[in-house]
Length: 555
Image (tube, one colour):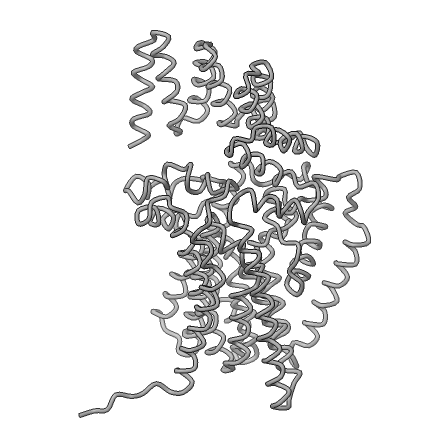
């Protein structure tokens, strides 16, 4: 009888460390089982999106692969949300806990990769632990709409593991595994377009292929991956341009974009070591304070100088300290799609953007400190200090997780740590409006208008309050102003149509619904409302045609 081979001590220790990571994530994010969905994007992604709220159906799956909803194309993310709805309905707790489970899995896979690639278990575990418990990760984990971060992280780590395995013993099957993992990651979030460059950085360290393998081969072997990423980037730019998410150069000029890249990167690094003042939205100073914003001011120039010096040091020390350049390059190239050169949205930066990039900075920090210490006792002290730091970060993260309890808590926290945060004011207004506090909601919407008058959604929300309080003239003016700000905004046109319908002007409502149906023929809402008002006007044939169109779209 053959004896069963027992796991090695290292393998048993690795299992224990994975369990420790899972426990840390579970303790941090258990409270999200009691959290609500928030108004910031969760409606568009989940509760108010019929193609997700309808679960995993054939029609909804087709929609996931063909729609540019929310100015993005990430079908795997939509499928994940649809599956959650199929399993749990729209109860928020299970959705949040699935996210926490994915985060724990990502931390474990990161540990597996680093342990295999570096052969050093202790620093690899510390990097994975800091990744797991850092407050900067909270937005990606506690916010249901950021499922795309977690799925992208899962396939990012799977790509790294497949690549490390392929470099040990190349084969077509192993290379195919890399391609498949990357493709799935891009279907979850196109931010992974920079992954081939990350692999090139890993060729330097810890894989040590630079110098052993000709540079031409290192580049050539990544060309199929680059082709995938180029295709994903093209589709993403199309989706964001059609959705109006990409800001034109005239709206935010090149000097401001340079400042965004510098200020965003330095903000991320500062919050890596001192994670305070975290908020779900960081207003861009060029938007909220253009009169005082200096694209080439002292803060920007000092930040650019620091980043340039660190980059020069990383390049200069590439032979003596290859982990420095590899980790710094990991961070830098992964930030490129979201750093503001192509400006998406009006935020200065976002914690969700650094879910994966900051792993590179952690590599520099942890392996740099590990390399600087030689004596065994000093290294033990270093790792003990690292565990203490992880504990303090976990404490801060636990507090930050609590701010995602509901929209009111989230927005009040953002207003406490940022200035002129018009997005937080607007979503606090929505929260108060749904709580029945119309006066409080109106104050928040007026606070938005005191900062910026460019958001059509604010006028829609204000119009709803005016209508609820019987201020018909003010309500109509607010809805019409929303349409002036954005004539193509479907919600604004439907809101004006519904206001006219409920005040007895069926002909005016029909005009608005008919135009909405012409401009957005694939949306069910305009056709449904058009059918109703046409029936009320006695336009039977038109009502029947609109009803049939709505029924066809709803199947």
